[in-house]
Every structure is written in C-alpha cells, then in structure tokens.
Image (tube, rainbow, N blue to C red; front, top):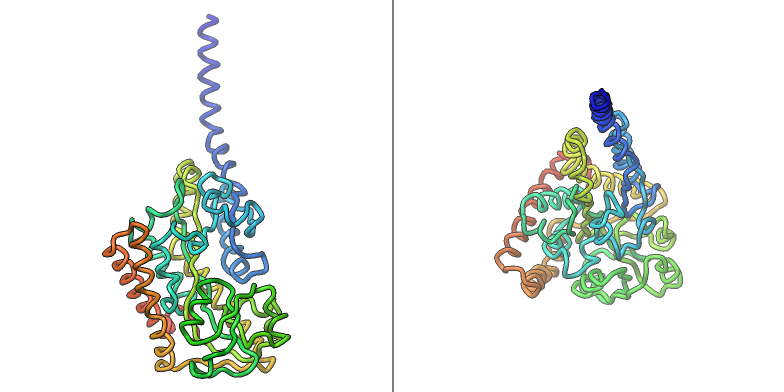
Length: 358
C-alpha cells in the first residue's frame, strides 16, 4: 500500500514538473544581456534596437526580453570575442577589425573604397555571413552570428573648403585609426593620428585642417563648431557582428528560436543600416541649418578617389593568404562582396531602401 502511495506521489510530482518546465524555460530567457557598441541616445539604439526589444517582449508575451548594455559595461571591448563565447553576453558585438588575424574574411566589407553607405554595407555584410561557411568558421567559438551591419561612411570635414583631391593634397587631416591613416596617405593628404575626443581641441587651434570620420559623432565631439565644410566622399564603412551565445541558443524552446530567426538576420541588418543613415540625415539637416556647406562628388570625381584605393584590395587578399586562407577563397569572398555592394547601391539609388543621398 505504501509503495502504491509513493508511486502515485511520484507520478504527481513528475506531472507537476512537466507543467512547470515551460514556465521555467521561459523565465530563463527574460532580461537577456544584449551588449552593443552604442549608448542609449545613439540613433541605432533609439530607432532599431529599442523597438525590437519591445517587439520581442510583446510578441512572445513576455517569454523573451532584453536588458541593454553599452560597450565596456559588461566587459572590456578587448574581451568581446571571449565574452560571446563564454556567455558573459547573451548577445554581444565583435568588431572584426579590432582583432587582426581572427575574422579575416569578414574584413572584406571593411576594405577602403568598398562600401559607400550603412544600408548598402549592412545588407552585404549579412549576405556575406550567410553565403560563406569559411567566413562563419572564423567566428568566435560557441557563438552564432545573429546579424551583421556596418557604420555610416567616412567623410572629410574641414575648417576651409576642400572640393576635390587636388585640394586635399598636403592637407593635415586627422585620422582616428590605422586604416584611416593609410587611406589619407593614399589620397595625398598629410594624416595626423589623434583620438576622436581630442580632435576638436586640435582643430580649434588650427593644428589640423580637417578630420576623416563619419558624420554621426562630429556634433557630440564639438567638431561641427570648428569644421563647417564637408566633402562627402563616402570611402568606406566599418563592420560589426552581433553574436548570440550558442549554448544559450541551443537551450531555447522552438517558439523563441523561431521568433528570433524570423526577426533577425537581414531584417536587423537593414534596421541598423537605416538607423545610421536616418541619423545622418538628421545631423546633416541640422548642419545645413547652421550654415554648413556639404559637397557631394560626381561619379567621375568619386572614381578618381576610389582608383587611389584599389591597392587596398590586393593587399587584403595578400594578408588573408599570409594567414593561411586560400587565395581563391579570399578572391571569391571579395568578388561576392563587390557584386552585392553594386547591387544594393543600385537599389538604394532607385529609392528601394528609402530616400538617401549618395
């Protein structure tokens, strides 16, 4: 009799566990740590990520939700590869060009002169991830790339008008990173390596003639107080990859995986790219209202700039080969990226992705 009662109690206990498992599993996916490179006032957080967080919570009836952490909050940026692998970030960003020799093939998007715009670059970056297993093989262990995107394009902001490449020659232009330094050298400028936060001081004291960077940060860094002229060269973007910890992903119930799959990938890449371009449009409208002068290049003028950057493509292939990647793989990746950039640029110019000026 006692055994029978114990058996009945055991069956009841199992049933209770079975009933509570879904609720427990759902609870495990609330307030997931989403670590991104932007502060909460950044256009990408406001226009793309915050609405996506709210949509996730609403459409999964609270089973899935996120807490946002900007870069450096959960861990130093230099630890981001390990952080997405070991689960310190449930979703976390890795910037490929911050880790030379790791995500080599992803760097095709970052080659100077390749991507002209955040929307174009973001879509091509995500397609690159989806197309090549060799690209995915270089990603951090125990992670899956949820989506990829790129920064807005780099422009030349100056104290006095710079209208073309001849006028750029010999000008002292601030570069914030090693790649920008080499780009400016190739264009005939005299680059000076100065941190973004120190650029306004240097410009205000006429220690430099201008700075090479995207539009987005120049207002917050007070650069717009010094630089009233902007040559819109759009000579490249920088890529980002948002990874999800694979152990976490594998533990998710099918409905949450489906929601994330349906609402990630190209959709998130597009949202991030558009947020950056829309933010740039707002900044440009403000700049023009303050009397700033923006000059856009003709196709012929743009080609002259791009021709100067062609050697960067061959150098990127050589760098990949020196790191053990087959040359045919590197060239196939570059060819694919260039084709997709060309396609999305045409679509952008036709207005398919919105009203953006190039």
